[in-house]
Image (cartoon, rainbow, N blue to C red; front, top):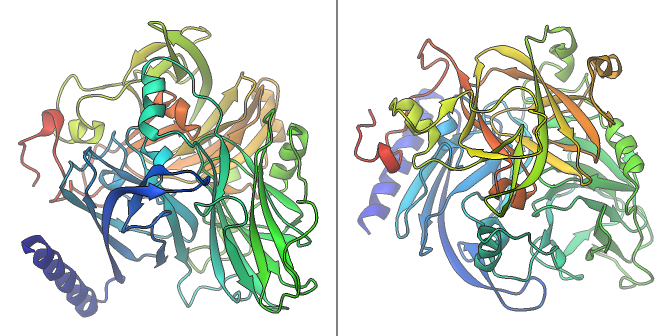
Length: 540
């Protein structure tokens, strides 16, 4: 009770300060994380619920809002939530991954303080610790434009979030034990749409009206194709970037990615299949939901519309059509094309090559020859308190080693604040990879099959490449991105293929400014949890 009163007092005080000082608005969320019974594939499982919900509550916000999210951990083990695509400007302490943030102990709470500074778009949150992601705990994040900022399409009749993803019917603890014992996981058993499979989710539309669908692949590993029976989709936004408005019959959504499309209810008044199915898998998994016309005269019927299956070239061609709308406003009134990324001099090229190998008789994954292992203290806290021996900057190289073997280390790459770098993700393997960078967007300037060489730059899109936080890398292929390192902090670079992330295919990018000014980075939060070798130290 005492804590509840304290939290309410903080809420009131912040609201009054915002009102008096004209600050950006505050939104407050009180979450309780528990285990509970769920039946996503028709059988009983132990799931992670937030306020009793699976998926968790949707976060609705507007550009520059301050989000105060008080998370009570009622699980019997530590817990963390990360915010996929929320940039945490100058504030990697709030990122919610173990490299930056201490886990919330069982029976305790932590209040995240996030600002969605200069952001719009479609994102999601999920549990980042252990293998909790396989048990739920995920939910949608919507960041709307401020009222005075023009949006390049009319306001839709409604705005729906669709969280799609592959799913295991095995308990997440059992999955984690399989990995800890050095083995590979079986393939997921099914697909979910908003936590359910098999026509259990309905979206109601009215004849003649247009709707926005925000589609996020929150799954564990698989690329999913998304389509709607009898309807075309107009792409309008990708992870915070308004896009050229291209129309598609179906859309590949790689794991960790988010898209916004517009659909118009312009077909005969009946119900239609919403379909998602796996790509690049020997066995195609499929799940459906229902697009329900309010004046429907017939239920869904006929065969489920088929989609592409193993065609990599089809997916690559589609990816190249996704481009930035240069004349549209983003989170600010100036056009998205105002920043001419193609004219900025690149100061550094980083080539990242993924690999898989056995280490000490156990399956591991890595990048540039290093398989990441967590330290005993979050890296950001060790950096702040100058604790020696937790990590070493430069423990991962800028280029592939050329070795097939892996070694274990707490991999941290250093980078200077306000530099402009080129990152080339190289995939010598036979699967589709998906790579994510916390704290940033990057411009996806090129992707192609074969090996990357400096001559590959001749094919780069230096005008209207899409800006996003997660990109795919096709088998035996490469993807190149440009990124302006304008956000000081310790940022996770990871595979979104969650087994690979768990078994070491990640590292941290330490973007450093020697100035130590609050203009570059916020101080450590006063409520920061301290653990490992940071326990007992003075915050500020």
